[in-house]
Amino acid sequence: MTIIDLSGAGIASRNLRGYLSEPTGAGPFPAVLMIHEAFGLNDIARRHADRLAAAGYLTLAVDLFSDGGPRSCLVSTMRSMLSGSGKAFTDLAAAQAWLEESGRTTGKMGVIGFCMGGGFALLIARNGFDAAAVNYGRLPKNPEEALMGACPLVGNFGKKDRTLPGAAAKLEAALDTLGIEHDIKEFEGAGHAFMNDAEEGPRPLRPLFRVMGIRPDPEAAAEAWQRIEDHFAKHLKN
Image (cartoon, rainbow, N blue to C red; front, side):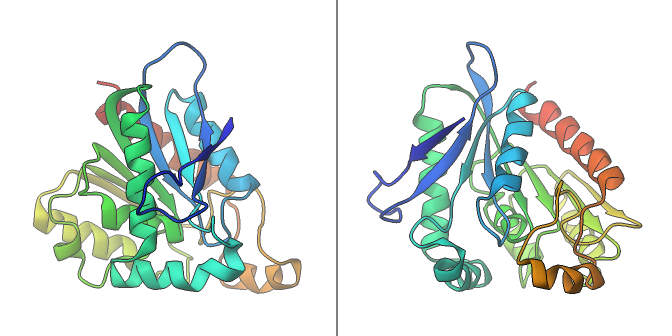
Protein backbone atom coordinates (compact mmCIF):
# COMPACT_ATOMS: atom_id res chain seq x y z
CA MET A 1 0.00 0.00 0.00
CA THR A 2 1.57 3.22 -1.23
CA ILE A 3 0.60 6.85 -1.70
CA ILE A 4 1.28 7.74 -5.35
CA ASP A 5 2.02 11.21 -6.69
CA LEU A 6 -0.10 11.68 -9.82
CA SER A 7 0.53 15.40 -10.29
CA GLY A 8 3.13 14.96 -13.05
CA ALA A 9 0.53 15.19 -15.80
CA GLY A 10 0.11 18.82 -16.82
CA ILE A 11 -3.67 18.59 -16.86
CA ALA A 12 -3.97 17.06 -13.39
CA SER A 13 -4.61 18.83 -10.10
CA ARG A 14 -1.47 20.34 -8.62
CA ASN A 15 -1.38 17.93 -5.67
CA LEU A 16 -3.12 14.93 -7.24
CA ARG A 17 -2.37 11.69 -5.45
CA GLY A 18 -3.78 8.24 -5.04
CA TYR A 19 -3.63 5.17 -2.83
CA LEU A 20 -2.07 2.18 -4.60
CA SER A 21 -2.83 -1.29 -3.26
CA GLU A 22 -0.92 -4.14 -4.87
CA PRO A 23 -1.60 -7.88 -4.93
CA THR A 24 1.00 -10.26 -3.62
CA GLY A 25 3.27 -11.83 -6.22
CA ALA A 26 5.35 -10.67 -9.14
CA GLY A 27 2.63 -9.59 -11.55
CA PRO A 28 1.71 -8.20 -13.98
CA PHE A 29 -1.88 -7.86 -12.78
CA PRO A 30 -5.17 -6.64 -14.19
CA ALA A 31 -5.76 -3.09 -12.95
CA VAL A 32 -8.67 -1.30 -11.32
CA LEU A 33 -9.18 2.45 -11.02
CA MET A 34 -11.24 3.13 -7.88
CA ILE A 35 -13.28 6.30 -7.22
CA HIS A 36 -14.23 7.16 -3.66
CA GLU A 37 -17.44 8.40 -2.04
CA ALA A 38 -18.31 11.98 -1.17
CA PHE A 39 -16.46 11.68 2.16
CA GLY A 40 -13.17 11.26 0.33
CA LEU A 41 -10.32 8.79 0.29
CA ASN A 42 -10.76 7.71 3.90
CA ASP A 43 -10.02 4.48 5.76
CA ILE A 44 -13.19 2.83 4.43
CA ALA A 45 -12.18 3.63 0.84
CA ARG A 46 -8.66 2.34 1.42
CA ARG A 47 -10.06 -0.92 2.76
CA HIS A 48 -12.15 -1.22 -0.41
CA ALA A 49 -8.95 -0.84 -2.44
CA ASP A 50 -7.15 -3.41 -0.30
CA ARG A 51 -9.99 -5.86 -0.83
CA LEU A 52 -9.66 -5.52 -4.60
CA ALA A 53 -5.89 -6.00 -4.36
CA ALA A 54 -6.43 -9.16 -2.30
CA ALA A 55 -8.61 -10.42 -5.17
CA GLY A 56 -5.69 -9.95 -7.57
CA TYR A 57 -6.09 -6.42 -8.95
CA LEU A 58 -3.53 -3.63 -9.00
CA THR A 59 -5.83 -1.00 -7.54
CA LEU A 60 -5.33 2.75 -7.67
CA ALA A 61 -7.80 4.75 -5.57
CA VAL A 62 -7.50 8.29 -6.89
CA ASP A 63 -8.08 11.17 -4.47
CA LEU A 64 -10.37 13.65 -6.19
CA PHE A 65 -10.03 15.96 -3.18
CA SER A 66 -6.22 16.15 -3.33
CA ASP A 67 -6.12 19.93 -3.63
CA GLY A 68 -7.96 20.75 -0.42
CA GLY A 69 -9.92 17.91 1.13
CA PRO A 70 -13.68 17.28 1.09
CA ARG A 71 -14.70 20.66 2.52
CA SER A 72 -12.88 22.58 -0.20
CA CYS A 73 -13.37 20.22 -3.12
CA LEU A 74 -16.71 18.43 -2.70
CA VAL A 75 -18.93 21.07 -4.29
CA SER A 76 -16.70 21.61 -7.34
CA THR A 77 -16.26 17.85 -7.78
CA MET A 78 -20.01 17.25 -7.66
CA ARG A 79 -20.53 20.05 -10.16
CA SER A 80 -18.01 18.38 -12.42
CA MET A 81 -19.91 15.09 -12.21
CA LEU A 82 -23.25 16.75 -12.93
CA SER A 83 -21.86 18.68 -15.92
CA GLY A 84 -19.81 15.79 -17.29
CA SER A 85 -16.66 17.91 -17.57
CA GLY A 86 -14.05 19.67 -15.48
CA LYS A 87 -11.05 18.98 -13.29
CA ALA A 88 -12.35 15.73 -11.81
CA PHE A 89 -12.39 14.14 -15.26
CA THR A 90 -8.86 15.26 -16.07
CA ASP A 91 -7.72 13.84 -12.72
CA LEU A 92 -9.41 10.52 -13.46
CA ALA A 93 -7.78 10.44 -16.90
CA ALA A 94 -4.38 11.13 -15.30
CA ALA A 95 -4.87 8.24 -12.86
CA GLN A 96 -5.97 5.92 -15.66
CA ALA A 97 -2.89 6.91 -17.69
CA TRP A 98 -0.63 6.25 -14.69
CA LEU A 99 -1.93 2.69 -14.46
CA GLU A 100 -1.60 2.15 -18.21
CA GLU A 101 2.00 3.40 -18.19
CA SER A 102 3.08 1.74 -14.94
CA GLY A 103 4.40 -1.41 -16.61
CA ARG A 104 2.70 -3.45 -13.86
CA THR A 105 -0.55 -4.38 -15.62
CA THR A 106 -1.73 -7.02 -18.06
CA GLY A 107 -3.39 -4.36 -20.19
CA LYS A 108 -6.83 -5.14 -18.81
CA MET A 109 -8.42 -2.44 -16.63
CA GLY A 110 -11.67 -1.95 -14.77
CA VAL A 111 -13.23 1.02 -13.01
CA ILE A 112 -15.23 0.93 -9.78
CA GLY A 113 -16.98 3.67 -7.87
CA PHE A 114 -19.07 4.10 -4.76
CA CYS A 115 -21.74 6.79 -4.21
CA MET A 116 -20.29 9.92 -5.90
CA GLY A 117 -17.59 7.68 -7.36
CA GLY A 118 -20.27 5.40 -8.80
CA GLY A 119 -21.65 8.36 -10.73
CA PHE A 120 -18.20 9.07 -12.13
CA ALA A 121 -17.68 5.39 -12.98
CA LEU A 122 -20.82 5.47 -15.10
CA LEU A 123 -19.62 8.57 -16.94
CA ILE A 124 -16.18 7.16 -17.82
CA ALA A 125 -17.22 3.54 -18.45
CA ARG A 126 -16.80 4.12 -22.20
CA ASN A 127 -13.29 5.59 -21.87
CA GLY A 128 -11.15 2.54 -22.59
CA PHE A 129 -12.10 0.30 -19.67
CA ASP A 130 -12.82 -3.42 -19.97
CA ALA A 131 -15.34 -3.62 -17.12
CA ALA A 132 -17.09 -1.29 -14.70
CA ALA A 133 -18.68 -1.70 -11.27
CA VAL A 134 -21.14 0.95 -10.11
CA ASN A 135 -22.31 0.96 -6.52
CA TYR A 136 -25.25 3.27 -5.66
CA GLY A 137 -24.02 5.87 -8.14
CA ARG A 138 -26.13 8.75 -9.42
CA LEU A 139 -27.29 8.28 -13.01
CA PRO A 140 -26.43 10.82 -15.72
CA LYS A 141 -29.23 13.14 -16.87
CA ASN A 142 -29.41 11.23 -20.15
CA PRO A 143 -28.23 7.68 -19.40
CA GLU A 144 -28.59 6.36 -22.93
CA GLU A 145 -26.45 9.13 -24.35
CA ALA A 146 -23.81 9.01 -21.59
CA LEU A 147 -23.48 5.21 -21.63
CA MET A 148 -23.30 4.67 -25.37
CA GLY A 149 -20.23 2.51 -26.01
CA ALA A 150 -19.73 1.65 -22.34
CA CYS A 151 -17.94 -1.51 -21.23
CA PRO A 152 -19.76 -4.41 -19.51
CA LEU A 153 -21.20 -3.19 -16.22
CA VAL A 154 -22.25 -4.61 -12.87
CA GLY A 155 -24.35 -2.43 -10.58
CA ASN A 156 -25.41 -2.70 -6.94
CA PHE A 157 -28.16 -0.52 -5.47
CA GLY A 158 -30.28 -0.53 -2.32
CA LYS A 159 -34.07 -0.49 -2.51
CA LYS A 160 -34.24 1.55 0.73
CA ASP A 161 -31.86 4.19 -0.64
CA ARG A 162 -33.94 7.37 -0.51
CA THR A 163 -31.30 9.31 -2.43
CA LEU A 164 -31.64 7.20 -5.61
CA PRO A 165 -35.25 6.06 -6.01
CA GLY A 166 -35.72 3.88 -9.07
CA ALA A 167 -32.10 4.26 -10.19
CA ALA A 168 -31.46 0.54 -10.66
CA ALA A 169 -34.47 0.07 -12.95
CA LYS A 170 -33.63 3.20 -14.97
CA LEU A 171 -30.03 2.09 -15.43
CA GLU A 172 -31.05 -1.41 -16.47
CA ALA A 173 -33.53 -0.02 -19.00
CA ALA A 174 -30.87 2.24 -20.56
CA LEU A 175 -28.35 -0.59 -20.80
CA ASP A 176 -30.99 -2.90 -22.31
CA THR A 177 -31.75 -0.28 -24.95
CA LEU A 178 -28.06 0.15 -25.76
CA GLY A 179 -27.37 -3.59 -25.85
CA ILE A 180 -24.57 -3.31 -23.28
CA GLU A 181 -23.78 -6.39 -21.20
CA HIS A 182 -24.86 -5.76 -17.63
CA ASP A 183 -25.94 -7.23 -14.32
CA ILE A 184 -27.87 -4.76 -12.16
CA LYS A 185 -29.31 -5.69 -8.77
CA GLU A 186 -31.36 -3.74 -6.24
CA PHE A 187 -30.96 -5.24 -2.76
CA GLU A 188 -34.29 -5.41 -0.98
CA GLY A 189 -33.29 -4.40 2.55
CA ALA A 190 -30.26 -2.24 1.80
CA GLY A 191 -29.93 1.52 1.61
CA HIS A 192 -27.24 3.90 0.42
CA ALA A 193 -23.56 3.18 1.15
CA PHE A 194 -24.49 -0.33 2.27
CA MET A 195 -21.10 -1.75 1.21
CA ASN A 196 -19.21 0.31 3.78
CA ASP A 197 -17.88 -1.72 6.70
CA ALA A 198 -18.48 1.14 9.17
CA GLU A 199 -20.61 4.25 9.50
CA GLU A 200 -19.02 7.45 8.23
CA GLY A 201 -19.61 11.17 8.20
CA PRO A 202 -19.91 13.60 11.13
CA ARG A 203 -21.19 11.78 14.22
CA PRO A 204 -24.02 14.27 14.90
CA LEU A 205 -25.42 13.56 11.43
CA ARG A 206 -25.31 9.78 11.59
CA PRO A 207 -28.82 9.38 13.05
CA LEU A 208 -30.14 11.41 10.13
CA PHE A 209 -28.15 9.27 7.69
CA ARG A 210 -29.77 6.16 9.17
CA VAL A 211 -33.24 7.63 8.65
CA MET A 212 -32.28 8.33 5.03
CA GLY A 213 -31.21 4.71 4.59
CA ILE A 214 -27.47 5.45 4.61
CA ARG A 215 -25.80 2.68 6.61
CA PRO A 216 -23.81 -0.53 6.29
CA ASP A 217 -25.52 -3.82 5.47
CA PRO A 218 -22.95 -6.64 5.87
CA GLU A 219 -25.14 -9.34 4.33
CA ALA A 220 -25.95 -7.35 1.19
CA ALA A 221 -22.36 -6.10 0.99
CA ALA A 222 -20.97 -9.65 0.91
CA GLU A 223 -23.18 -10.54 -2.05
CA ALA A 224 -22.40 -7.26 -3.82
CA TRP A 225 -18.66 -7.82 -3.47
CA GLN A 226 -19.00 -11.35 -4.83
CA ARG A 227 -20.89 -10.00 -7.84
CA ILE A 228 -18.12 -7.47 -8.46
CA GLU A 229 -15.37 -10.07 -8.14
CA ASP A 230 -17.20 -12.42 -10.53
CA HIS A 231 -17.70 -9.60 -13.04
CA PHE A 232 -14.10 -8.45 -12.91
CA ALA A 233 -12.78 -12.02 -13.09
CA LYS A 234 -14.81 -12.62 -16.24
CA HIS A 235 -13.70 -9.48 -18.04
CA LEU A 236 -10.26 -8.68 -16.59
CA LYS A 237 -8.68 -12.07 -15.87
CA ASN A 238 -9.70 -14.00 -18.99
